Length: 311
Image (cartoon, rainbow, N blue to C red; front, side, top):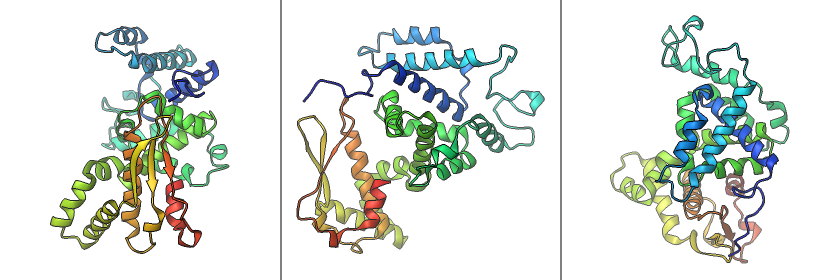
């Protein structure tokens, strides 16, 4: 395995890329309504020196957040004594970020929408093949900052937060606006459409087996039965790693026949394998390898599944 870090990864960033990462953190803070003015870079430095951080893995993210907070503070008008995201009583706000009329969610959504109004959705949607700009707008319209923040940290799992953000920046060629749209739309898809963290990965194959035995809903039972059938036949599975330390996912396409299982179970199985591969990654490795046997024939290709996987 090569010890050389690929460019654009944590530990091998140019000054320009580091600045983009800081800008990305500030943009995410705005979406999550995190008060940058109350962040003390000095306390972060003390935390970074704490004895429980033996490997120093927390240093980079603390340094990034500190720099982001400091950079954002310089841009603020010195005459403004309150945070960009705090609503004063004069504005009709309450301590919990809600409003006097008892509609905290509505006020939070309005505040977030205003905070990210500078995002260039037209430019971000120019090459948007999967409707991520629309999902971005739906997420801001339907989710509170707290739920977006919870979804974000549920998605991070064992990843270094900086490393996760860098994935989105690289995918959008270091365009912060496009990366933010991609991140928020991905979180919305994971939380509201697929329920990746609170259903598929939480229950796993054990939950599917329990549902088959106890479910009274025939549709849910069928989805679980088909999910288990695909796992047992070994349609796709993880086995070993290559010379670069990347987990190998073997996909036996000959075992897949469109219509044998309901579409929802195929999608759940696909997400389950991808997320399991992600949990198998050992830094600095951040990708897995798909291996498809050469007996694949295009006549048996399930284009709906291909489109879902690409998305």
